[in-house]
Amino acid sequence: MSVSLIIPALNEAECLGALLSEIPAQLIDQLIVVDNGSTDQTYQVARTAGAQVVNEPRRGYGFACAAGAANASGNVLVFMDGDGSFTPAELPTLLAPLEKGQADLVLGSRILNQSQPGAMPPHQRLGNRIFTWLLRQRFGLALTDLGPYRAIQRELLLVLDMQEHTYGWPLEMIIKTARRCNPIIELPISYRPRFAGQSKVSGTLRGTLLTAYRYSQVMLRYSF
Image 1 (cartoon, rainbow, N blue to C red):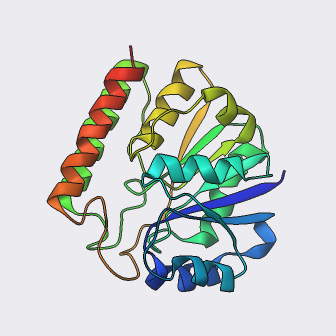
Image 2 (cartoon, helix red, strand yellow):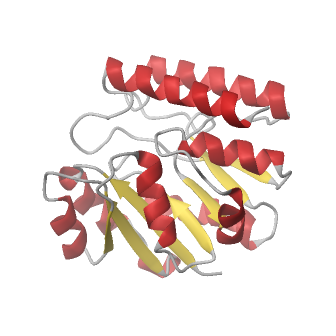
């Protein structure tokens, strides 16, 4: 099993250096940082840390993830945020079910492992509950989180024909995998406050509402 770790990053220069230093090199074959139109030193920090940097000037989480996947060589792709909120040392947790053939998509759940205080604000927890409830009603998926720390078989991602260019990208992946009846496993992972700065999703009212809107669009577009 060869593993490509893909980290979408938009203005994460303050966080990336420390995060990349935590990544256990023996567990991955390729490290990709996707610079999603940053105006800070994200590109330079990633290159200095030895990452392969992919430029994706079109702003959007889905655009960044797709660009990383297009440049990945591994047969397993892992997606992780660039803000330091996830722990790279827990990569074996996500990879184990894929290596054993137990799942084609593995999701890291911040809820199952209880996030560190202050890492996940109440409105983010509420949004997770709403959309995981909808997934349970529609597909019978007993999920607790839509978190972006996940691992997927490359072959599966290619046939999913991902279209979403925004923060709805992870939800589209779950829905399309469920519709194909490919096995999905959810496992507890740690979640800590970001290393620096403010979250672009849960850190502002605008970001929170926009993400909820995108999720709603994805649910309507792909669930029925």
